[in-house]
Length: 146
Image 1 (cartoon, rainbow, N blue to C red):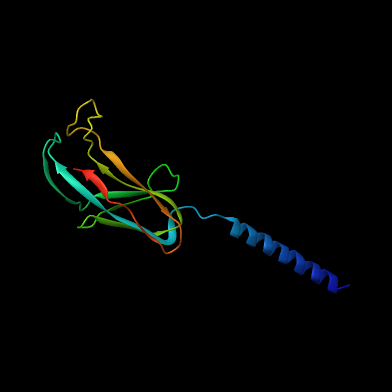
Image 2 (cartoon, rainbow, N blue to C red):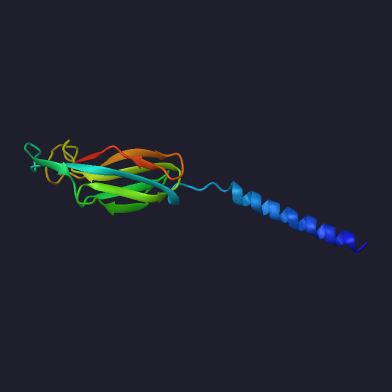
């Protein structure tokens, strides 16, 4: 008789362990930090005068802010600045969808029907997908107007 309660206790413990293991393995990790993959690219700038009538210069853009949005989030999850050669890299990411963007001056005249120095900036967005661990995804160049 004493043997039966011990066996029953072991079965109950095993069931709780298996249920806990099931909950842990069922959790899907969302996009974001904590992984082994990275996303990198470059930002290229064209430098115009205030009315966008004269192109003064163009080069890979140093010290430009680049943002990343994790999955379906509404706002950015991380922000960094480009290196001296216009390059950037977001590290330690999980599998999933990401949006990478930088701001550019708006030359379309969408603000009050005029293209000028007071036009608001627009986001130049690149959609990126990480599909496996330890992957480095190269983003096509983000072209901005300065």
